Image 1 (cartoon, protein in one colour):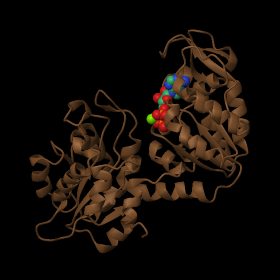
Image 2: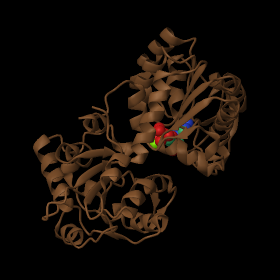
Image 3: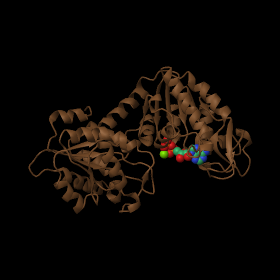
Image 4: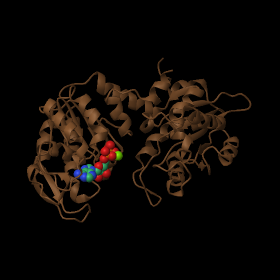
Length: 407
Ligand code: ADP
Ligand code: MG
């Protein structure tokens, strides 16, 4: 069955109806200060449309990785404030997830009100592997939007960053309520579909970030589809090690070296690695940078960025691409001295986009890098809010939070 959209729900009329929305509000927080509000901003259109139409909106979301119990460090309190500012209306925060406070507040909602539940991951059932446990939490969530008068409730799935997770607030609630894809999820799915179905060549994929193990499956899958896969970031060192080079104290996953060697053997003509690296002594913003050839990384030093010659070569590959997918920064862009690689590659993608390429950026940190480095967000065709979810989609995996919406 085709996925029903937010407009389908709005067309029915939602005035006075309880609507549960799963959003992705997982923003970087430092001492209660929101670093990059991108995900909050991306969540606003769906919540606003429902609130404006008079629904009683109950939003559920997670923040970070609390250990299945309340932890003030991971409270959504700062997010409730920021969401309220973006929406232009007060957002209540429940003191618990599905407890007495949440229930009392949900019962007190009037048309157009927005209630944010406390971090859903304070409840261990959210991520439980036990179907019955997850279902019990989903039932408690549904109870918050149920109307004793019989006005039908609905579920809107809008947390694209979590649709690859079979979790209570993502998957199980959709088995209990009429369900709809929110505006964000609908856009994301449409873009990813375009990326996998009608890909114009040359198709270039840029991969970076910290963990090679997370991204090997996508390399394997894309190696047969893309014309070039450019690899930088923390993951390139395992590949360099697979070529027999020494990588000093750079990030490296020894257990993955063999797999990387096999990938290089099978797809050596598609995979491109950096030829120079910016190294330093320790992982610190003020540790002085030094550029070396990729096969001359000194013992005791770590690579924190790709070098200028690599940026030049990657730019040449990207400049004539017609389709580009980018996930993962090329270096530790959070430290200004190690941001040039990420910035250079991003600018190359922006250049290709200006010449008509279709470009997609996926990944929380990659999206944050675009904004933090002062690059124009509209220089890309689409900036995805979900790194893991978009990678799994491109790997050809089924996303439980999407397939349940089709039923
Ligand atoms: P995304 O969220 O875009 O999918 P990841 O989470 O995989 O990206 O990785 C982002 C992180 O990778 C950034 O915080 C960045 O500092 C880090 N990173 C990039 N290059 C390196 C490197 N050479 N060494 C260590 N960390 C790196
Ligand atoms: Mg990340």
